[in-house]
Image (cartoon, rainbow, N blue to C red; front, side, top):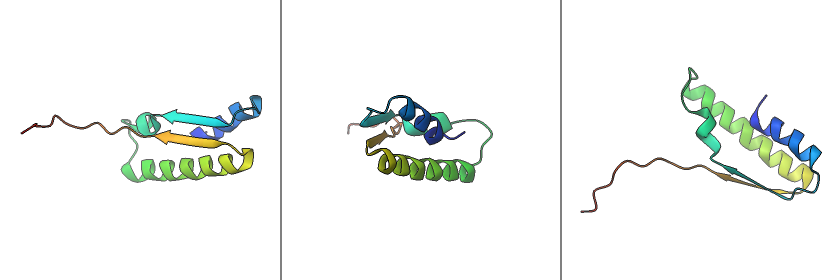
Length: 75
């Protein structure tokens, strides 16, 4: 079951929801034995699913994806 499918079950239980904030989106895709292509496919399907959910239930979905940056030299 993809993340947006699980989210829809929560929305159905709490129909008064108008805003969903997901932080951090890609964190659950890190590691494991999944190829880059499969992760890319999963992300695309989830994003399309979130868009459909937002339209269907008239709510906003905010997705945050933090990127880990390496140490920076201030000079």
